[in-house]
Amino acid sequence: MAGDIRVLVRRGADMVEWFDDVARLRAEVFRAFPYLYEGDAEYEKHYFATYARSAGSVLVLVLAGDEVVGASTGLPLGEAEPAFQAPFLDRGIPVEEVFYCGESVLLPAFRGQGLGHRFFDEREAHARSLGGIRWTSFASVNRASDDPRRPADYRGNDVFWTRRGYTRQPDMQVSLPWKQLGEAHESEQTLTMWLRPLEAGQ
Image (cartoon, rainbow, N blue to C red; front, side, top):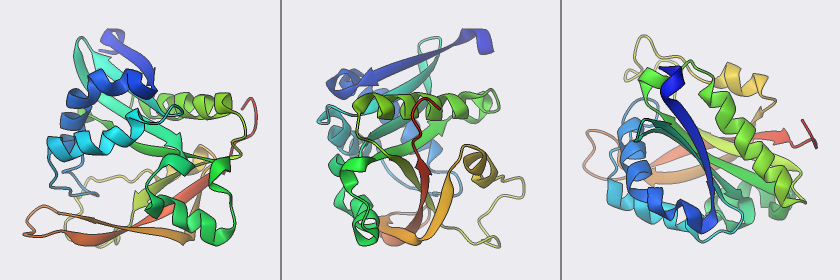
């Protein structure tokens, strides 16, 4: 299977042609725990418009044949939604010094092949190429360890992220509304930021 996989990197407006494929993928993957997101592809395309407008954004694609089976995004924090900027401003970290690594999605059949590392490698390399970036960061949704919706075989990514050099920041949180599976309306969900110094050349 690995021999059929290709990784493509697109920046800024060059990612527009992939919006439909990535939107469908995100809507599918995010239905699973821990996000439990009952979204739709049209909303996802609207979300991606922010990335297309950013000259400093990046999209990392994983293709199996012609099918998009994985995708990961990032952009300078100063061009991200204000909700993601607020925890950094509160701590006194200039947003222009931070590159925000958006969500990564990958179909289950393609996990465990090193693609999670490739997503981070590509985004961190892109962040270095922009100049002036001192930190990379991302947000993960908060879920209780005893959440009844948690599958018995679920494995979180905390160990993986820690090995990548990221540290969870309990005092840096974001609240976002989305509709969870089985809910009639949106509800506020809390996410916590993870932060890593972007050492040059590492």
